[in-house]
Amino acid sequence: MYAPERQQAIMRLARESGRVDVVSLAEEFQVTAETIRRDLKTLDRAGLVRRVHGGAIPVGRLDFEPDLAERETTAADEKDRIAKAALAEVPVDGTVIVDAGSTAARLAGSLPVELSLTVVTHSLPIAARLADHPGLQLHLVGGRVRHRTRAAVDAWALRAYGEIRADVLFVAANGFSPEHGLTTPDLAEAAVKRAAMAAARRVVLLADSSKHGQEHFARFGDLNDVDLLITDSGLSPDDALAIERGGTEVVRA
Image (cartoon, rainbow, N blue to C red; front, top):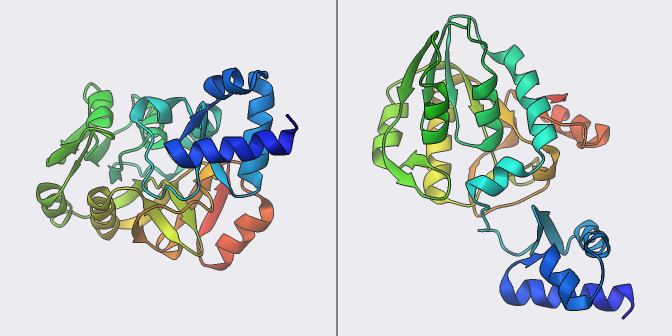
């Protein structure tokens, strides 16, 4: 089987099942995992699939949402660099909101022990990570907890963010672009992100470059609602310039 034939077959399987994984495809077509990765890279560049940890999904799945464990291991080096760069945006003796997300969790885990800060979050994993930090006043926003992200959502969370003001919000997104704005797969999480953005004087988006150009089901803001985007060097200088022309500062860590 030639590569284009194999790639067409991979696309058919992806559309039928909603997702394909490298190991199963290698067994199916009797080729190496590296060959399948090259196929998926070709299909990704053609805009036919979106590569995820261990495989790919067809681009039509706007509601696709990887689970927490998968997000923790995807683009790990890039997320570590983003979190390190984000430390420069943490105010001294101020108040920050930390959104749910794997990159935001890395930022939370990087906060120096000598830091004095008030932190508000609706993420259970982030709250657990910060609970023993000696210098923080930690506020956990309540609500219905989504199993997939361990984030509190719905009326309680929205009410809490409506009652506070913070210096900085570190927000996450599953997709961002000048055309589609900020998107995430779930409407309830989008509503909480929107409320958190309204509660902060400064909005900092933490998103690795694979999220650029991605579009998901629930939209929670425009890219120009973001004061600063911290991403990785995978975002091209031309794309960074296009974003900055819209009024958002860009840091490529």
